[in-house]
Amino acid sequence: MDVGSSTTHICEDLTDKELAARWKEIPMETARSYVNKLQTRIAKAVKEGKHRLARRLQYLLTHSFYAKVLAVKTVTENKGKRTPGVDGILWNSPQQKMKAALSLTDKGYRAQPLNRIYIPKPNSTKKRPLSIPTFYDRAMQALYAIALQPWAETTADRTSFGFRKFRGAHDAMQYIFNCMSKPRSAEFVLEGDIRSCFDCISHEWLLKHIPMDKRILNQFLKSGYMFEGAHYETLMGTPQGGLISPILANMALDGMEILLKGRFKERKVNLIRYADDFVVTAETRDIAEEVRVTIENFLSERGLTLSEEKTKVIHINDGFDFLSWNFRKYGSKMLIKPSKKSIDSVTHAISEIIKNAKGWSQEQLINRLNPIILGWTLYHRNVVSAAIFGKLNHIVWGMLWHWAKRRHPDKGKYWIVRKYWHSISTSNWVFTTFTSTLRLFTHTKIKRHILIKMESNPFLDQEYFSKRYSGDTSKQTKIPFFYTVP
Image (tube, rainbow, N blue to C red; front, side, top):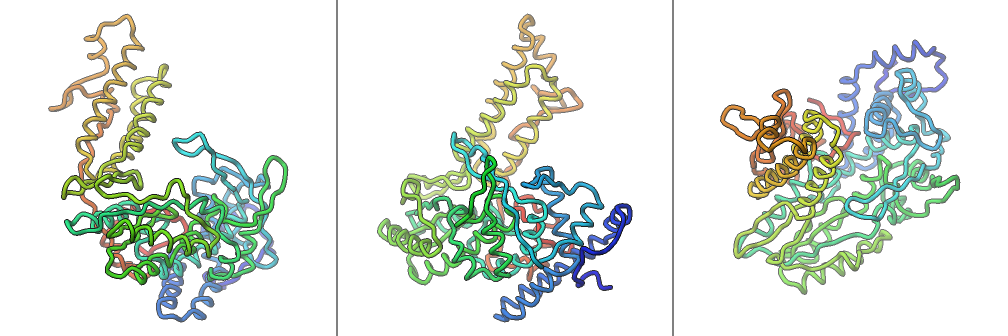
């Protein structure tokens, strides 16, 4: 049997031991290679306008054993692997994973309701809904996302950077710099905010325009959700928490760039979009307002609206925040720095950890702080951050000094210094146990980001991406259902 292209069946009579053994024997690299080849063929067919061929290849991919295996592998290895849906079922063991891969099918498929919970929004007292599908529905979404992603990438806006493979916030940042840093660049920015984008996208628009099995897509969209024991219908939107939702949202918003370029030729109008957040550059305030009306009409066809309070036109000399950076021109020079909100956020996070570390050892505290400091500095190392890194070093040192004094109220300051701070090589005042050492913000060196080739496609230009990243994909938006051949 050709396991790569065969349709699987749930009637295979195997014991748990045999199922576990078969799962462990699956050649995952072969599976990735097979899936990637089909994805590449889909992307080529879409690029050449052969949509019927692309749909046939999608069907072949969603019915292949290897794609089902990778779909199951995706949902059982991501962050939600310990969170069940409404049925309470987890896929933890190899035999459960193998049984799941053999049972995935579109025949008679009906999605179960989502498990709705509400989680706090960052830096806000408000909460946002999170809808958790069952593992079976997650795997079905991952399976169809594998087949939909090549089509989405091939037809995507050039300047869309969110939830896309090998593109990310740093590319969006660099593109804004390229558009606005020159003396005669656009001076105005429309800062756009789409109101409840994921919750309000029109089902009718998605069912009409998304190139995938309409019956399966309808099941994903109309599954409803359970909250506090009651069932609610979903009449619009894509569930936040669904694996396929970012692709659907991106495809709904694609076309905005071409529309603006066609309507505002030679007016310095450039769209930069990251998922449902976007900015548009413009030559004058009036043009920016015209762009706003054009985008409102574009969104209304998809059941979406702009937030009146958060959508505004700003002059570059006043600066604006986007993706946790502040973009502003000082005279003729444009500088990009970490935003005040981002600085306050990391400062607050570190402060809370240190406040709660009264009973921790120095090593435990260092091990909790280092990942936060490293992650924050890696994100901001491509902008003008050196002075801010130095300032944060000083702030954190003060917090640690208060932590150490509080632990030893009867000891003098020289004793406290000798216990917690030491000299290593040429560095003094190092907060270390010699087995664990606190990372300073300034340990991360500033490094300029190289903008991605805007026309590149991860399915068709794999050699370019292989050379560009050389195994380092730390900046890309994480897409768990895309597989590349090394």
